[in-house]
Amino acid sequence: MTSEQLSPATVAVTAGRPPAVPNAAFNTPVTFTSTYVASDGATAPGDLGYGRWTNPSWQAFEEALGRLEGGRSLLFGSGMAAVSAALSLVPDGSAVVVPRHAYNGTLGLLGVLADRGRLVPRPVDIADTEQVVAALPGAAMLWVETPTNPLMEVADLPALAAAGRAAGALVVVDNTFATPLLQRPLRAGADVVVHSVTKYLAGHSDVVLGATVTADDALHAALHADRTLHGAVPGPMEAFLALRGLRTLHLRVERAGANAVELARRLSGHPKVLRVRHPSLPDDPGHARAAAQMSGFGAIVSIEVTGGPDGAERLASATRLWVHATSLGGVESSLERRRRHSGEPPTVPENLLRLSVGIEDVEDLWADLAAALDQLE
Ligand SMILES: *Cc1c(COP(=O)(O)O)cnc(C)c1O
Image (cartoon, rainbow, N blue to C red; front, side, top):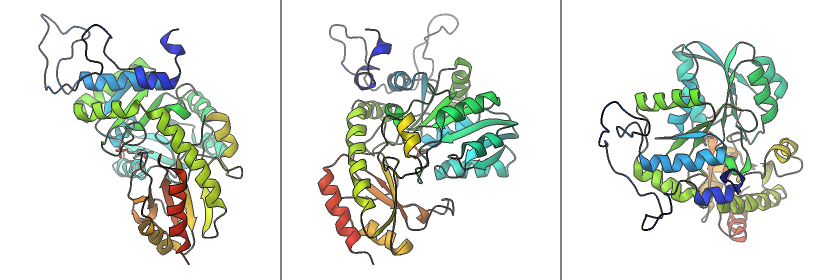
């Protein structure tokens, strides 16, 4: 059996370990160092060089994520550092087709880069394939997020990757919500994948990290140069924690996803819930597409509740098990009204709460949520 044939669950557990030789450490140790002893003569391939260039603890995580996504990975100091590095791949003044709804940090950075004349964003409804294709001529990059944060819109990944390539645009996919276990954008034709490793990949709400993955050596080299020269490097301890988290990714994604499917179904029938957004629901606009291109529906569920923004805030502070907090993708269930952030697009409803469903017992999660919902007007 070659390593390519192993299931992703096995890769998540086994990739990025040191060779299993007598007395070797089982796990890649944390390497705290700023520099490495030089080889004789000119720098040789495989030389580590300096602590801003690479680190064995980063490399162990990169090996595992690269195998899961089907490319070469680079770990960054945050998801936004990875987003920023990916956006740096196109020349000054480039048009970039971007989802109108996406992670608000990505939208915020695009706004800053647009104000400076660095990039020209072309906002589109990413679920509307015709609209995206119509915006592509002359664009240097197509940025895809699917499912989108926080509206759970599902883009037609294979169609957009093909259209982007045909138009000569680099196709970048933010795969944070799906993880490589549910969706593999490089296989669907994308050029670069970005991740907020902070979320599902690390999975325990205890590190901030990001990553890029690409199967193209030139793009990998450009991203590596960007990381080295801008200095957005991770700490070795964070890399170790992220790899430790990644070992259970398949179990967490499976359990949290199953919880999300059940909670989305129950929430759909609750009188205080006006709308539920989760692609598992048969009447969700993204259902057919997600069923075709993903191997699960993910564990983010967005709901709109009665009582407007106040109702949503009240719900967030009334739950006891569900933690009122930003961020997502940890083992713990959390929820947040997204419009409390000024950077959130005004088209995101004021009464929308984004639920990050964790791996707790689903009956406990439902009881807590239902009790808080019952308190709404
Ligand atoms: C959180 C997030 C990011 C940014 O990642 P950080 O690790 O917070 O810098 C990017 N994209 C998506 C979809 C996210 O949820």
